Length: 217
Image (cartoon, rainbow, N blue to C red):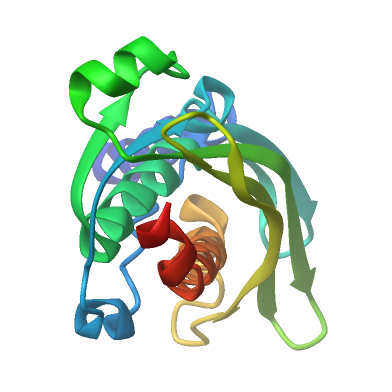
Protein backbone atom coordinates (compact mmCIF):
# COMPACT_ATOMS: atom_id res chain seq x y z
CA UNK A 1 0.00 0.00 0.00
CA UNK A 2 1.48 3.37 -1.02
CA UNK A 3 1.68 6.35 1.34
CA UNK A 4 -1.09 8.28 -0.43
CA UNK A 5 -3.61 5.43 -0.03
CA UNK A 6 -2.63 4.98 3.62
CA UNK A 7 -3.11 8.70 4.26
CA UNK A 8 -6.60 8.63 2.74
CA UNK A 9 -7.59 5.66 4.90
CA UNK A 10 -6.28 7.32 8.06
CA UNK A 11 -8.11 10.54 7.19
CA UNK A 12 -11.35 8.65 6.63
CA UNK A 13 -11.01 6.82 9.96
CA UNK A 14 -10.27 10.12 11.73
CA UNK A 15 -13.37 11.81 10.26
CA UNK A 16 -15.57 8.79 10.95
CA UNK A 17 -14.25 8.62 14.50
CA UNK A 18 -15.05 12.30 15.09
CA UNK A 19 -18.53 11.89 13.68
CA UNK A 20 -19.45 8.66 15.43
CA UNK A 21 -17.46 8.67 18.66
CA UNK A 22 -17.98 12.07 20.23
CA UNK A 23 -21.08 12.94 18.24
CA UNK A 24 -21.37 15.02 15.10
CA UNK A 25 -22.88 18.43 15.91
CA UNK A 26 -25.70 19.19 13.48
CA UNK A 27 -25.87 22.74 12.16
CA UNK A 28 -29.27 24.33 12.77
CA UNK A 29 -29.96 27.79 11.32
CA UNK A 30 -33.71 28.47 11.14
CA UNK A 31 -35.08 31.64 9.58
CA UNK A 32 -38.14 33.69 10.45
CA UNK A 33 -41.25 33.46 8.31
CA UNK A 34 -41.29 36.45 5.92
CA UNK A 35 -44.89 37.21 6.85
CA UNK A 36 -43.72 38.36 10.30
CA UNK A 37 -41.77 41.21 8.70
CA UNK A 38 -45.04 42.68 7.39
CA UNK A 39 -46.59 42.86 10.87
CA UNK A 40 -47.20 46.26 12.45
CA UNK A 41 -45.66 46.00 15.90
CA UNK A 42 -47.87 46.18 18.98
CA UNK A 43 -46.94 49.34 20.95
CA UNK A 44 -46.05 47.67 24.23
CA UNK A 45 -42.93 46.79 26.28
CA UNK A 46 -42.77 43.02 26.78
CA UNK A 47 -40.37 41.01 28.92
CA UNK A 48 -39.50 37.52 27.60
CA UNK A 49 -38.58 34.68 29.92
CA UNK A 50 -37.49 31.47 28.14
CA UNK A 51 -36.87 28.62 30.55
CA UNK A 52 -33.27 27.44 30.84
CA UNK A 53 -34.20 23.85 30.00
CA UNK A 54 -35.39 25.06 26.59
CA UNK A 55 -32.41 27.36 25.98
CA UNK A 56 -29.97 24.54 26.70
CA UNK A 57 -31.86 21.76 24.92
CA UNK A 58 -29.50 19.41 23.09
CA UNK A 59 -30.51 15.98 21.82
CA UNK A 60 -28.27 13.05 20.92
CA UNK A 61 -29.39 10.47 18.42
CA UNK A 62 -27.77 7.30 17.07
CA UNK A 63 -28.50 5.79 13.69
CA UNK A 64 -27.37 2.55 12.10
CA UNK A 65 -28.11 1.24 8.62
CA UNK A 66 -26.45 -0.68 5.79
CA UNK A 67 -26.02 2.47 3.69
CA UNK A 68 -25.26 5.05 6.37
CA UNK A 69 -23.30 2.89 8.76
CA UNK A 70 -23.23 4.07 12.39
CA UNK A 71 -23.72 7.77 13.13
CA UNK A 72 -23.95 9.69 16.37
CA UNK A 73 -25.70 13.04 15.98
CA UNK A 74 -25.94 15.94 18.42
CA UNK A 75 -28.80 18.39 17.77
CA UNK A 76 -28.35 21.73 19.62
CA UNK A 77 -32.02 22.71 19.37
CA UNK A 78 -32.50 25.09 22.29
CA UNK A 79 -30.19 27.99 21.38
CA UNK A 80 -31.52 28.61 17.83
CA UNK A 81 -35.11 28.15 19.02
CA UNK A 82 -34.69 30.72 21.80
CA UNK A 83 -32.96 33.13 19.43
CA UNK A 84 -35.78 32.90 16.89
CA UNK A 85 -38.43 33.46 19.55
CA UNK A 86 -36.62 36.62 20.64
CA UNK A 87 -36.26 37.84 17.03
CA UNK A 88 -39.95 37.21 16.40
CA UNK A 89 -40.93 39.10 19.56
CA UNK A 90 -38.91 42.14 18.44
CA UNK A 91 -41.02 42.23 15.28
CA UNK A 92 -44.34 41.75 17.07
CA UNK A 93 -43.73 44.17 19.97
CA UNK A 94 -42.30 47.69 19.92
CA UNK A 95 -39.93 46.99 22.83
CA UNK A 96 -38.57 43.72 24.20
CA UNK A 97 -36.47 42.92 27.27
CA UNK A 98 -35.00 39.42 27.58
CA UNK A 99 -35.29 38.16 31.17
CA UNK A 100 -33.01 35.64 32.90
CA UNK A 101 -35.65 34.78 35.48
CA UNK A 102 -39.38 35.05 35.98
CA UNK A 103 -39.76 38.65 37.18
CA UNK A 104 -41.41 39.90 40.34
CA UNK A 105 -43.94 42.73 40.26
CA UNK A 106 -41.27 45.05 41.64
CA UNK A 107 -38.88 44.14 38.80
CA UNK A 108 -41.64 44.64 36.22
CA UNK A 109 -42.51 48.07 37.58
CA UNK A 110 -38.86 49.15 37.76
CA UNK A 111 -38.15 48.09 34.16
CA UNK A 112 -41.40 49.56 32.82
CA UNK A 113 -42.52 46.21 31.46
CA UNK A 114 -46.19 46.05 30.47
CA UNK A 115 -46.51 42.31 29.79
CA UNK A 116 -44.45 39.14 30.24
CA UNK A 117 -44.14 36.28 27.74
CA UNK A 118 -42.93 32.97 29.18
CA UNK A 119 -41.97 29.99 27.02
CA UNK A 120 -41.15 26.45 28.13
CA UNK A 121 -40.50 23.16 26.39
CA UNK A 122 -43.21 20.50 26.38
CA UNK A 123 -41.76 17.94 23.95
CA UNK A 124 -38.98 17.50 21.41
CA UNK A 125 -38.83 14.19 19.57
CA UNK A 126 -36.62 13.30 16.61
CA UNK A 127 -37.30 10.53 14.13
CA UNK A 128 -34.45 9.64 11.75
CA UNK A 129 -35.40 7.26 8.94
CA UNK A 130 -33.29 5.72 6.17
CA UNK A 131 -35.20 3.99 3.39
CA UNK A 132 -32.48 1.77 1.99
CA UNK A 133 -34.56 0.42 -0.90
CA UNK A 134 -34.76 3.88 -2.49
CA UNK A 135 -31.63 5.41 -0.90
CA UNK A 136 -33.23 8.34 0.82
CA UNK A 137 -33.43 9.68 4.36
CA UNK A 138 -36.41 11.31 6.05
CA UNK A 139 -36.01 13.47 9.13
CA UNK A 140 -38.96 14.33 11.37
CA UNK A 141 -38.97 16.61 14.41
CA UNK A 142 -42.00 16.79 16.68
CA UNK A 143 -41.80 19.98 18.73
CA UNK A 144 -44.18 21.37 21.35
CA UNK A 145 -43.82 24.46 23.51
CA UNK A 146 -46.04 26.08 26.10
CA UNK A 147 -46.40 29.85 25.97
CA UNK A 148 -48.02 32.12 28.51
CA UNK A 149 -48.63 35.84 28.26
CA UNK A 150 -49.04 37.69 31.55
CA UNK A 151 -49.99 41.26 32.28
CA UNK A 152 -47.86 43.52 34.49
CA UNK A 153 -49.60 42.11 37.56
CA UNK A 154 -48.66 38.57 36.44
CA UNK A 155 -52.26 37.66 35.63
CA UNK A 156 -52.62 35.34 32.61
CA UNK A 157 -53.85 36.89 29.38
CA UNK A 158 -53.53 33.52 27.67
CA UNK A 159 -51.75 30.17 27.98
CA UNK A 160 -51.42 27.76 25.10
CA UNK A 161 -49.52 24.68 23.95
CA UNK A 162 -48.22 24.92 20.38
CA UNK A 163 -47.32 21.71 18.53
CA UNK A 164 -45.71 21.30 15.10
CA UNK A 165 -43.97 18.68 12.97
CA UNK A 166 -40.86 19.53 10.96
CA UNK A 167 -39.86 17.35 8.00
CA UNK A 168 -37.01 17.06 5.50
CA UNK A 169 -36.14 14.66 2.71
CA UNK A 170 -32.51 13.97 1.83
CA UNK A 171 -31.75 11.95 -1.30
CA UNK A 172 -28.48 10.11 -1.82
CA UNK A 173 -26.06 11.20 -4.53
CA UNK A 174 -25.72 8.28 -6.92
CA UNK A 175 -22.49 9.71 -8.36
CA UNK A 176 -20.68 9.11 -5.08
CA UNK A 177 -22.49 5.82 -4.37
CA UNK A 178 -23.24 6.82 -0.81
CA UNK A 179 -19.69 7.90 0.01
CA UNK A 180 -20.59 11.24 1.58
CA UNK A 181 -23.48 9.69 3.54
CA UNK A 182 -21.11 7.19 5.13
CA UNK A 183 -18.80 9.95 6.34
CA UNK A 184 -21.14 12.87 7.13
CA UNK A 185 -24.49 11.10 7.36
CA UNK A 186 -27.84 12.26 5.96
CA UNK A 187 -28.84 15.89 6.49
CA UNK A 188 -31.37 16.02 9.30
CA UNK A 189 -30.77 19.61 10.41
CA UNK A 190 -33.41 21.03 8.02
CA UNK A 191 -36.13 18.97 9.75
CA UNK A 192 -35.35 20.73 13.03
CA UNK A 193 -35.14 24.09 11.27
CA UNK A 194 -38.58 23.44 9.77
CA UNK A 195 -40.15 22.71 13.16
CA UNK A 196 -38.56 25.78 14.77
CA UNK A 197 -39.72 28.05 11.94
CA UNK A 198 -43.26 26.66 12.19
CA UNK A 199 -43.61 26.89 15.97
CA UNK A 200 -42.16 30.41 16.15
CA UNK A 201 -44.53 31.63 13.42
CA UNK A 202 -47.42 29.94 15.20
CA UNK A 203 -46.48 31.73 18.42
CA UNK A 204 -46.21 35.04 16.57
CA UNK A 205 -49.70 34.57 15.12
CA UNK A 206 -51.05 33.73 18.57
CA UNK A 207 -49.61 36.91 20.07
CA UNK A 208 -50.92 39.07 17.23
CA UNK A 209 -54.41 37.60 17.64
CA UNK A 210 -54.42 38.91 21.22
CA UNK A 211 -53.37 42.44 20.26
CA UNK A 212 -56.61 44.00 21.53
CA UNK A 213 -56.47 42.33 24.92
CA UNK A 214 -52.74 43.04 25.32
CA UNK A 215 -53.00 46.77 24.61
CA UNK A 216 -56.18 47.18 26.68
CA UNK A 217 -54.47 45.62 29.67
